[in-house]
Image (cartoon, rainbow, N blue to C red; front, side, top):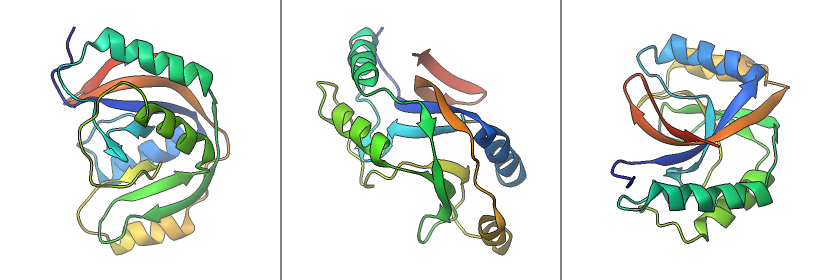
Amino acid sequence: MIIDNPTYLISELAGDVVALVEEMRERFNPNHDWPVDITIAGSSGIGTIKEGQDISVVIEAFQSIITSHGFTEVTFISASRFPNTGIYYLAPECSSFDVLHKAIAGSEIQFNENKWPYNPHCTLRAGIEPTDESDLMIKSMSLPKNSIIECFSLYQPFSGGGRVHRF
C-alpha cells in the first residue's frame, strides 16, 4: 500500500491525561475527533510523511527506531497556549520526545516541509482566537500525574477516525 494522504506519526496516550483532554475537547471542540496524543511527525518539526512511499517500509523504519528509543512514561510539566493562537496544550518533559523526534527526522523516511519548530505537546483546545474562559482554565488546571504512551500510530485524519496502523 502506498501512502496517498497526509499521514502523521503520533504517540497515543493512556492514563489520567485521557479524561482531562477529552473533557476539554468536548467543552471547546465538540465536533473534532482526534486521538489524545503527542505528535512525533506531522505538526511540528518535520511535516507529515511524504506521499508515494510504501507504508510497509515506513512502518518497518519507525518500528525499529521506536524499539531502540522506546519509553512509555510521560510527565506533563505545564499547560500553556501557543502565542497568537487559541491553541491550548499540555507540555510534557521533552528530552525523550526530542531524542525520538531527532532519530525519526534522520531516518530514510521522507517528510513534507513544516514551518513550525518541534514542540512536543498534547492539544487541549484548538482554535484561532484565545478566550478568557480558556485562559482561566489553563491557570487553574491540575496537571495529569499518571500518563503513558499506549502505542504509536500512523494517523490520517478524517471524520470519525483516521488510524492507519498501530504499533
